[in-house]
Length: 88
Image: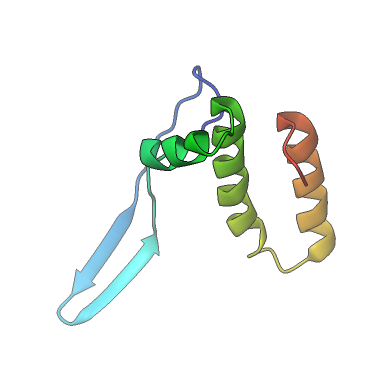
């Protein structure tokens, strides 16, 4: 996730296919926030910055849910919430 205009990313996803056996060593997705979703939130009275933060926070929340150690997940959530002024 890139959280500034100056950030950059290099991605190298790999997919190996042997006959009928598909194996993925790691996946990668790159894209922008869904402008229709931002518009939807803005149409309901949420400011643009708040709408974008809400969407980013929801994305990060899905990732944090996969962390099995609750203490680690909570610490990461707290640090990100403070750094980016998200609701934790």
